[in-house]
Length: 179
Image (cartoon, rainbow, N blue to C red; front, side, top):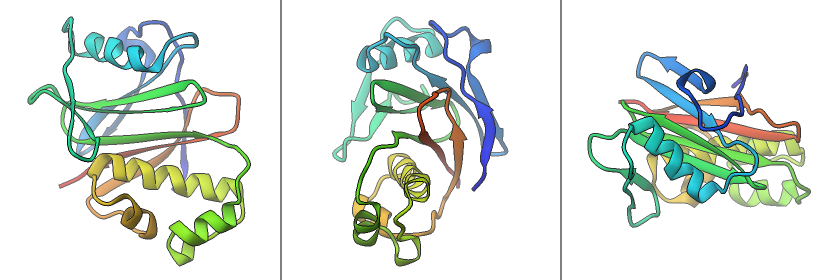
């Protein structure tokens, strides 16, 4: 998939004009990037309180650790890497998002062990591009993580690789569940 070319803005407690909105036939997805100096754990609840216009947001997790908002409040997912955090929210459909900053790894060995054979690579950019899609898909639809990794298709979902607002090399993917 190609990058959208849209950069996510950083801002203080985000007025509605300062986040990215991805619109597709299935849903509108709001994507927020945490401002520097915030704590990811407290920022997620703070921004969800702002989005939902409620003083307290109840986030529960299922048996696999997937977060859920109260029924009727929509769907949210977030990812943090190297002290940065992104949050995706949709009123209409389940979402998954993943952010990864590049670091040195044995990409060939990891991808051979965990990815579909067609995806094995020793190149960092190819590895991370693929990894964030898989993780966003898993966070959106659930299932068994290692079976998601081994699969090179993404049924019942749409996935985009996006460009975050960070100077440091990174990959960012968003997944929505489609019916």
